[in-house]
Image (cartoon, helix red, strand yellow):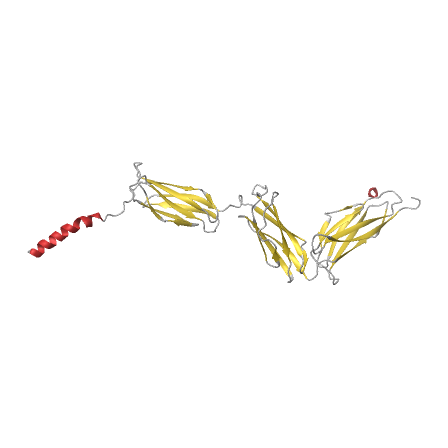
Amino acid sequence: MKQAVALLALLCLLAPALGCDKASPVAPAGSILSLSANPTKIGLNGSSTITVVGRKPDGNPLNPGTEIRLSSDLGTLSPSIVEVDSGGRATATLRGDGRSGPAKITAATADATVDTTIQIGDTDTTRPTALVSVTPSTVALGGTAEVTVIARNADGSPVAPGGRVTLTTTLGSLVNDRPQIQGNGVATTTLNAGDREGTATITAIVGSSAPATTTATIVLDAATAISVTANPASIQSTATTEIRITATVTNSRAQSVSGALVIFESDIGSFTTTTSETTNASGEATKTLRVAPGDIPAAPFESFRVRVRTPSSSGSTFIEGSTQITINRPSGT
């Protein structure tokens, strides 16, 4: 009898404690959720505050402690389960993980779901652009070339000065791989060719821009000489003549240099296309010069000169060559 009374007394003592362990409140059917993000656009490693508000069908806030599940298909979201406060509100944080794109955020209870979107990183229509070039494009071992990056915003305006360009090269080395953008949206640095032949691929990135690339050919010997021929080498003063101008670029071992820039100039006449060309595998660059009778000055003008030039290995000076073309006039003029 005494044992039964003691057991009954123990159960009475435990009853209040057992009654305190209650389950979290559940959102009733017909509940309404709203979801917002601040800001709605973040950097690749930025963050945004996600706010969810839950209300009962009658418009009153969900009971405090009601759980709402959160998820995202991009970036990381923490926490993934939140409990609303007395106003039916709860917050979480979305953080970028280095991937770019729209992140779809979803909040859900048993029978209510709502979505919102955050842009992580720039889109193709909002990101800046980069254009990279190297001069000269053929560099001798141990030589240098200037690397130029033009940085533009999506609307085409120059990127604000003070920012940095990220540069890499697959061959040789860069004097500064993080050059600063100047007031005109241009950043420059120097490529040191080093002691290995091959093709250097130079890549530039401005902020969240897509990578831009260019190449430089590093050779044992860069251009050291340029010669030029004209066919025909003499013309009639009374007829329009097209003259084939051929420039040949060679190195110190008299080997052809391909990919070298050649600039063409003439005292008279005009070239039928642009005045510059790059040499082919044989080290040759060709242009057509058209000379009409009206282009030729009166006698005693008897000849004119065509000049060609190509950048030296330093890129700061030019190697030049020229040829003379004779003008034949009718007798007595």
